[in-house]
Image 1 (spheres, helix red, strand yellow):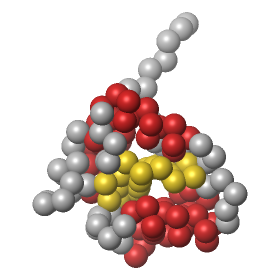
Image 2 (spheres, rainbow, N blue to C red):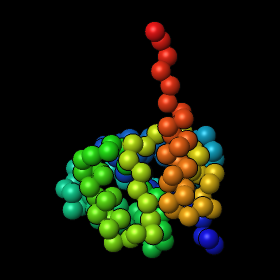
Image 3 (cartoon, rainbow, N blue to C red):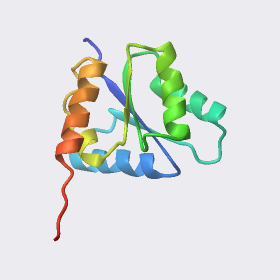
Image 4 (cartoon, rainbow, N blue to C red):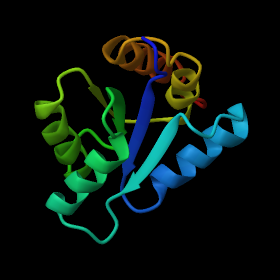
Length: 126
């Protein structure tokens, strides 16, 4: 893969912007991820935002919840772009890992991100 893979983070309100900013602060990488918010838009408008953020190359779209408008917009995009991948249930650990593994094909990068994100989950307490 000649061009490094891009990630698009789609969320409710300002979560995508916060996650992308946190990844940039941690990694120093500011070009790997693009935030998209559903704030103040219809499902159709959100779909257009996702398409514009992705651009012409394959990518991984990360959405905040495994349901709702963000996932619907990403799934709609994926139907027309099977070379890309969608991950539902984004977290900071998976995004940091993704930034360092953008040389992988989209589906492999998405699977790796999910594995990393799942391993980061912990329960503390009794």
